[in-house]
Length: 297
Image (cartoon, rainbow, N blue to C red; front, side, top):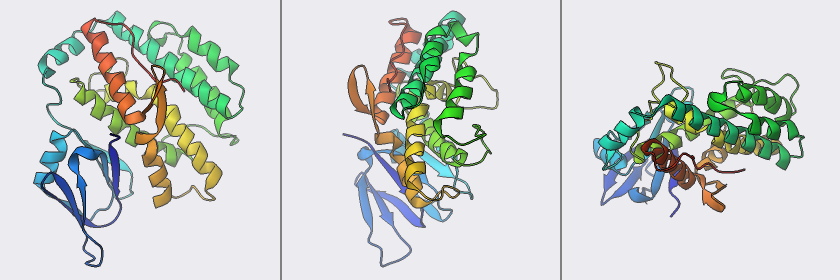
């Protein structure tokens, strides 16, 4: 079953009863709703007047739900994850911590190559020349020593949206606001899958900023970013104004969890595919394989 993504943009009271999430509203005319907690994969709490019980937090955490909180500007800023996400967690932590530098460089090489390949796939789908991208994807070396990721990014962002002078910046002009929101949700999905696979989302294979608690999530989500870009591209085609993140735009961006991706030759919801990716990553740390399983655009 595809896990559901729930978005709360209005004041609400969230409680739990009989393994159901119970959603009540201050407006008595709005009907109380219930959702089986086992069906939930991601929850986004946007409104500042949402009240949630500790009992709900416990049940959501036990079911490995990625609970994302937003700030006063409606942007995702926090993520609640379980302290223990796998029965073999101690052993899996050990394998992750003891991973050799050559292995991590090889894993980053695979990751960058997969990212550039998927970026090229999106450009191809939109009829944009991408031969250079395909070549760069094949030329990535161990640890991406030649920084092909950055070279590909310059070309990719220059061509994708056909906006003169557009650059990908956290505080840049639209559609950077859409990309920021979509990537924040993708990051939560990735961290959720990492924890459920028994690993620490903090210890990356490439990212290592001491102020970043989700270095591994930032590593592993890279080849998945083009799926967010695809949604943003569609929004730009269908919406007249993208200056503001409206409810409709957010709903479309939140569909990232259920978007179909092709992984290992089969179509799968991204939420499921991400778990396959993180499980294959652990197998690399364990030593049973040396290949991360990523989707192909």
